[in-house]
Image (cartoon, rainbow, N blue to C red; front, top):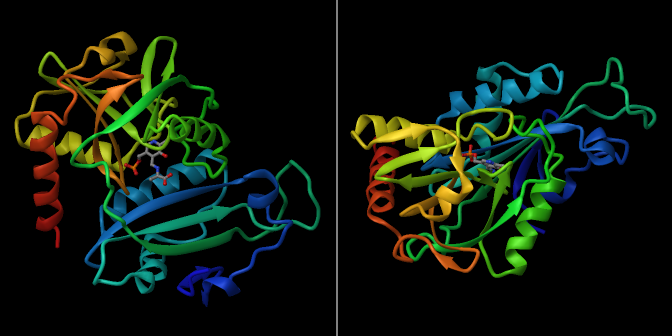
Length: 280
Ligand code: PDD
Protein backbone atom coordinates (compact mmCIF):
# COMPACT_ATOMS: atom_id res chain seq x y z
CA UNK A 1 0.00 0.00 0.00
CA UNK A 2 1.17 3.50 -0.78
CA UNK A 3 2.45 5.41 2.21
CA UNK A 4 1.02 8.76 1.16
CA UNK A 5 -0.60 11.15 3.60
CA UNK A 6 -4.40 11.21 3.58
CA UNK A 7 -7.01 13.22 5.50
CA UNK A 8 -9.48 11.52 7.84
CA UNK A 9 -11.80 13.34 10.26
CA UNK A 10 -9.49 16.24 11.09
CA UNK A 11 -6.17 14.36 10.95
CA UNK A 12 -3.47 13.88 8.31
CA UNK A 13 -2.24 10.29 8.44
CA UNK A 14 -0.17 7.83 6.40
CA UNK A 15 -2.67 5.86 4.27
CA UNK A 16 -2.17 2.52 6.12
CA UNK A 17 -3.08 4.23 9.42
CA UNK A 18 -6.33 5.75 8.17
CA UNK A 19 -9.02 3.43 9.57
CA UNK A 20 -12.82 3.62 9.62
CA UNK A 21 -15.21 1.57 11.78
CA UNK A 22 -17.03 -1.38 10.21
CA UNK A 23 -20.19 0.32 11.50
CA UNK A 24 -19.54 3.34 9.26
CA UNK A 25 -22.65 3.85 7.15
CA UNK A 26 -20.51 4.20 4.05
CA UNK A 27 -19.33 0.63 4.58
CA UNK A 28 -22.70 -0.79 5.68
CA UNK A 29 -25.08 1.04 3.33
CA UNK A 30 -23.05 3.03 0.81
CA UNK A 31 -24.64 5.98 2.61
CA UNK A 32 -22.46 8.84 1.44
CA UNK A 33 -21.36 11.05 -1.42
CA UNK A 34 -18.04 11.88 -3.06
CA UNK A 35 -16.19 14.32 -5.31
CA UNK A 36 -13.27 13.96 -7.70
CA UNK A 37 -11.43 17.27 -8.16
CA UNK A 38 -8.46 17.60 -10.54
CA UNK A 39 -5.47 19.73 -9.60
CA UNK A 40 -2.99 21.03 -12.16
CA UNK A 41 0.40 22.15 -10.79
CA UNK A 42 -1.12 22.46 -7.32
CA UNK A 43 -4.19 24.47 -8.45
CA UNK A 44 -7.55 22.85 -7.80
CA UNK A 45 -9.51 23.07 -11.08
CA UNK A 46 -12.93 24.76 -10.84
CA UNK A 47 -12.94 24.18 -7.07
CA UNK A 48 -16.06 26.30 -6.51
CA UNK A 49 -18.01 24.27 -9.06
CA UNK A 50 -16.91 21.02 -7.40
CA UNK A 51 -17.82 22.34 -3.95
CA UNK A 52 -21.21 23.50 -5.26
CA UNK A 53 -21.86 19.99 -6.62
CA UNK A 54 -20.70 18.58 -3.28
CA UNK A 55 -23.28 20.78 -1.51
CA UNK A 56 -25.97 19.65 -3.96
CA UNK A 57 -25.09 15.97 -3.39
CA UNK A 58 -25.16 16.46 0.40
CA UNK A 59 -28.54 18.20 0.15
CA UNK A 60 -29.73 15.33 -2.07
CA UNK A 61 -29.05 12.81 0.70
CA UNK A 62 -30.06 15.23 3.50
CA UNK A 63 -26.62 15.33 5.12
CA UNK A 64 -25.37 18.64 6.54
CA UNK A 65 -22.19 20.01 4.97
CA UNK A 66 -19.57 19.57 7.72
CA UNK A 67 -17.36 22.40 6.37
CA UNK A 68 -17.45 25.82 4.75
CA UNK A 69 -15.85 26.31 1.32
CA UNK A 70 -12.83 27.97 2.91
CA UNK A 71 -12.45 25.05 5.32
CA UNK A 72 -12.65 22.56 2.44
CA UNK A 73 -9.92 24.43 0.59
CA UNK A 74 -7.77 24.46 3.74
CA UNK A 75 -8.32 20.72 4.26
CA UNK A 76 -7.51 19.71 0.66
CA UNK A 77 -4.57 21.99 -0.13
CA UNK A 78 -1.95 20.22 2.07
CA UNK A 79 -2.62 16.97 0.18
CA UNK A 80 -1.46 18.46 -3.14
CA UNK A 81 1.98 18.28 -4.74
CA UNK A 82 2.50 21.13 -7.25
CA UNK A 83 4.98 19.01 -9.22
CA UNK A 84 2.24 16.76 -10.57
CA UNK A 85 -1.17 16.79 -12.18
CA UNK A 86 -3.33 15.14 -9.56
CA UNK A 87 -6.87 14.56 -8.39
CA UNK A 88 -8.45 14.69 -4.97
CA UNK A 89 -10.89 11.95 -4.00
CA UNK A 90 -13.16 13.33 -1.26
CA UNK A 91 -15.79 11.20 0.45
CA UNK A 92 -18.34 12.08 3.14
CA UNK A 93 -20.51 9.42 4.79
CA UNK A 94 -23.29 9.67 7.35
CA UNK A 95 -20.83 8.54 10.01
CA UNK A 96 -20.68 5.64 12.45
CA UNK A 97 -23.81 4.88 14.48
CA UNK A 98 -23.95 2.50 17.48
CA UNK A 99 -25.96 -0.07 15.55
CA UNK A 100 -27.00 -0.90 11.99
CA UNK A 101 -30.33 0.77 11.24
CA UNK A 102 -31.49 1.99 7.84
CA UNK A 103 -32.98 5.21 9.29
CA UNK A 104 -30.64 8.16 9.83
CA UNK A 105 -28.81 8.18 13.20
CA UNK A 106 -29.08 11.27 15.39
CA UNK A 107 -26.13 13.37 16.54
CA UNK A 108 -23.53 11.34 14.66
CA UNK A 109 -20.72 13.29 12.98
CA UNK A 110 -20.10 12.64 9.29
CA UNK A 111 -17.00 10.70 8.29
CA UNK A 112 -14.77 12.85 6.06
CA UNK A 113 -12.00 11.25 4.03
CA UNK A 114 -9.77 12.80 1.35
CA UNK A 115 -6.75 11.53 -0.56
CA UNK A 116 -4.75 12.75 -3.52
CA UNK A 117 -3.41 10.67 -6.43
CA UNK A 118 -1.40 11.49 -9.53
CA UNK A 119 -3.32 11.64 -12.79
CA UNK A 120 -1.91 9.00 -15.13
CA UNK A 121 -2.48 10.40 -18.66
CA UNK A 122 -5.18 8.23 -20.21
CA UNK A 123 -3.58 5.87 -22.72
CA UNK A 124 -6.52 5.85 -25.16
CA UNK A 125 -6.69 9.61 -25.50
CA UNK A 126 -5.00 10.26 -28.83
CA UNK A 127 -5.90 7.03 -30.59
CA UNK A 128 -9.50 6.94 -29.32
CA UNK A 129 -11.21 4.05 -27.55
CA UNK A 130 -13.87 1.42 -28.06
CA UNK A 131 -17.15 1.43 -26.15
CA UNK A 132 -20.23 -0.75 -25.75
CA UNK A 133 -23.81 0.35 -25.18
CA UNK A 134 -26.00 -1.05 -22.40
CA UNK A 135 -29.44 -0.44 -20.96
CA UNK A 136 -29.00 1.89 -17.99
CA UNK A 137 -29.79 -0.23 -14.92
CA UNK A 138 -28.95 2.45 -12.32
CA UNK A 139 -31.35 4.22 -9.98
CA UNK A 140 -33.36 7.40 -10.56
CA UNK A 141 -31.11 9.84 -8.63
CA UNK A 142 -28.02 9.80 -10.84
CA UNK A 143 -27.51 13.56 -10.35
CA UNK A 144 -26.28 12.80 -6.80
CA UNK A 145 -22.60 11.83 -6.72
CA UNK A 146 -23.36 8.92 -4.39
CA UNK A 147 -20.68 6.44 -3.32
CA UNK A 148 -23.30 3.72 -3.94
CA UNK A 149 -21.87 2.86 -7.38
CA UNK A 150 -22.81 -0.78 -7.92
CA UNK A 151 -24.78 -0.02 -11.09
CA UNK A 152 -21.91 2.01 -12.56
CA UNK A 153 -19.37 -0.63 -11.58
CA UNK A 154 -21.28 -3.45 -13.26
CA UNK A 155 -21.61 -1.39 -16.44
CA UNK A 156 -17.91 -0.43 -16.53
CA UNK A 157 -16.83 -4.01 -15.80
CA UNK A 158 -18.94 -5.31 -18.69
CA UNK A 159 -17.11 -2.84 -20.95
CA UNK A 160 -13.68 -3.89 -19.67
CA UNK A 161 -14.52 -7.56 -20.22
CA UNK A 162 -15.26 -6.74 -23.87
CA UNK A 163 -11.94 -4.93 -24.23
CA UNK A 164 -13.68 -1.56 -24.19
CA UNK A 165 -12.92 1.62 -22.22
CA UNK A 166 -16.47 2.65 -21.39
CA UNK A 167 -20.11 1.56 -21.38
CA UNK A 168 -22.55 4.10 -22.86
CA UNK A 169 -25.87 3.92 -21.06
CA UNK A 170 -29.19 4.02 -22.90
CA UNK A 171 -32.63 4.65 -21.40
CA UNK A 172 -35.94 4.60 -23.31
CA UNK A 173 -34.04 4.85 -26.59
CA UNK A 174 -31.95 7.86 -25.52
CA UNK A 175 -28.21 8.10 -24.89
CA UNK A 176 -27.73 9.13 -21.23
CA UNK A 177 -24.04 9.15 -20.17
CA UNK A 178 -21.12 6.77 -19.63
CA UNK A 179 -20.65 4.47 -16.62
CA UNK A 180 -18.20 7.05 -15.19
CA UNK A 181 -18.39 9.90 -17.70
CA UNK A 182 -20.67 12.29 -19.57
CA UNK A 183 -21.24 11.90 -23.27
CA UNK A 184 -21.07 14.23 -26.28
CA UNK A 185 -22.00 13.54 -29.92
CA UNK A 186 -21.30 15.58 -33.04
CA UNK A 187 -24.48 15.33 -35.13
CA UNK A 188 -24.92 17.37 -38.34
CA UNK A 189 -21.92 19.48 -37.29
CA UNK A 190 -23.42 20.37 -33.88
CA UNK A 191 -21.83 19.29 -30.60
CA UNK A 192 -24.69 17.79 -28.54
CA UNK A 193 -24.89 16.58 -24.96
CA UNK A 194 -27.90 15.46 -22.91
CA UNK A 195 -29.43 18.10 -20.61
CA UNK A 196 -28.91 18.11 -16.84
CA UNK A 197 -31.67 15.97 -15.34
CA UNK A 198 -31.74 13.39 -12.55
CA UNK A 199 -30.62 10.85 -15.20
CA UNK A 200 -27.04 12.14 -15.37
CA UNK A 201 -24.27 13.34 -13.12
CA UNK A 202 -23.79 17.05 -13.84
CA UNK A 203 -20.15 16.75 -14.85
CA UNK A 204 -17.82 19.68 -14.28
CA UNK A 205 -15.82 18.73 -17.39
CA UNK A 206 -19.11 18.76 -19.34
CA UNK A 207 -19.87 22.30 -18.17
CA UNK A 208 -16.35 23.52 -18.97
CA UNK A 209 -16.62 22.08 -22.51
CA UNK A 210 -19.95 23.84 -23.07
CA UNK A 211 -18.47 27.14 -21.81
CA UNK A 212 -15.48 26.72 -24.13
CA UNK A 213 -17.70 25.79 -27.09
CA UNK A 214 -19.67 28.98 -26.54
CA UNK A 215 -16.54 31.11 -26.22
CA UNK A 216 -14.97 29.65 -29.38
CA UNK A 217 -18.15 29.73 -31.51
CA UNK A 218 -18.42 25.96 -31.84
CA UNK A 219 -22.10 25.15 -32.49
CA UNK A 220 -23.51 23.18 -29.53
CA UNK A 221 -26.77 22.11 -27.96
CA UNK A 222 -27.98 20.56 -24.70
CA UNK A 223 -30.70 18.21 -25.84
CA UNK A 224 -31.81 14.61 -25.60
CA UNK A 225 -29.89 12.39 -28.05
CA UNK A 226 -31.65 9.44 -29.65
CA UNK A 227 -29.36 6.44 -29.41
CA UNK A 228 -30.06 5.77 -33.10
CA UNK A 229 -28.69 9.24 -33.91
CA UNK A 230 -25.64 8.70 -31.69
CA UNK A 231 -24.83 5.54 -33.63
CA UNK A 232 -24.67 7.64 -36.81
CA UNK A 233 -22.83 10.59 -35.21
CA UNK A 234 -19.60 11.75 -36.88
CA UNK A 235 -17.96 11.95 -33.42
CA UNK A 236 -18.72 10.57 -29.96
CA UNK A 237 -16.78 11.54 -26.82
CA UNK A 238 -16.90 10.72 -23.14
CA UNK A 239 -15.70 13.29 -20.59
CA UNK A 240 -14.60 13.22 -16.96
CA UNK A 241 -12.24 14.98 -14.59
CA UNK A 242 -9.60 12.25 -14.66
CA UNK A 243 -9.70 11.34 -18.39
CA UNK A 244 -10.78 14.74 -19.81
CA UNK A 245 -12.18 14.31 -23.36
CA UNK A 246 -11.88 10.80 -24.78
CA UNK A 247 -12.93 10.14 -28.38
CA UNK A 248 -14.88 6.93 -29.01
CA UNK A 249 -13.94 5.47 -32.38
CA UNK A 250 -15.94 2.24 -32.23
CA UNK A 251 -19.32 1.53 -30.60
CA UNK A 252 -20.61 -2.05 -30.32
CA UNK A 253 -18.08 -3.14 -32.95
CA UNK A 254 -19.04 -0.48 -35.53
CA UNK A 255 -16.89 2.53 -36.45
CA UNK A 256 -18.00 5.98 -35.31
CA UNK A 257 -17.43 8.47 -38.12
CA UNK A 258 -14.20 7.53 -39.85
CA UNK A 259 -13.12 5.24 -36.99
CA UNK A 260 -10.57 7.74 -35.70
CA UNK A 261 -10.64 10.84 -33.44
CA UNK A 262 -12.47 13.61 -35.31
CA UNK A 263 -11.66 17.26 -36.00
CA UNK A 264 -14.09 18.70 -33.42
CA UNK A 265 -12.46 16.53 -30.72
CA UNK A 266 -9.01 17.71 -31.84
CA UNK A 267 -10.11 21.34 -31.63
CA UNK A 268 -11.81 21.00 -28.25
CA UNK A 269 -8.95 18.95 -26.78
CA UNK A 270 -6.49 21.70 -27.81
CA UNK A 271 -8.78 24.45 -26.45
CA UNK A 272 -9.16 22.62 -23.12
CA UNK A 273 -5.38 22.20 -22.71
CA UNK A 274 -4.87 25.93 -23.42
CA UNK A 275 -7.66 26.81 -20.96
CA UNK A 276 -6.05 24.68 -18.22
CA UNK A 277 -2.72 26.45 -18.82
CA UNK A 278 -4.42 29.86 -18.68
CA UNK A 279 -5.61 29.14 -15.13
CA UNK A 280 -2.13 28.43 -13.75
N1 PDD B 1 -16.66 10.17 -12.39
N2 PDD B 1 -20.98 10.79 -14.99
C1 PDD B 1 -20.61 9.85 -14.11
C2 PDD B 1 -21.52 8.72 -13.82
C3 PDD B 1 -19.34 9.95 -13.48
O1 PDD B 1 -18.98 9.02 -12.58
C4 PDD B 1 -18.48 11.03 -13.81
C5 PDD B 1 -17.12 11.19 -13.18
C6 PDD B 1 -18.92 11.99 -14.74
C7 PDD B 1 -18.06 13.17 -15.14
O2 PDD B 1 -18.04 14.16 -14.13
P1 PDD B 1 -16.78 15.14 -13.97
O3 PDD B 1 -16.56 15.77 -15.30
O4 PDD B 1 -17.22 16.13 -12.96
O5 PDD B 1 -15.61 14.30 -13.54
C8 PDD B 1 -20.18 11.84 -15.31
C9 PDD B 1 -15.48 10.32 -11.58
C10 PDD B 1 -14.29 10.81 -12.32
C11 PDD B 1 -15.25 9.05 -10.78
O6 PDD B 1 -16.24 8.47 -10.35
O7 PDD B 1 -14.10 8.68 -10.53
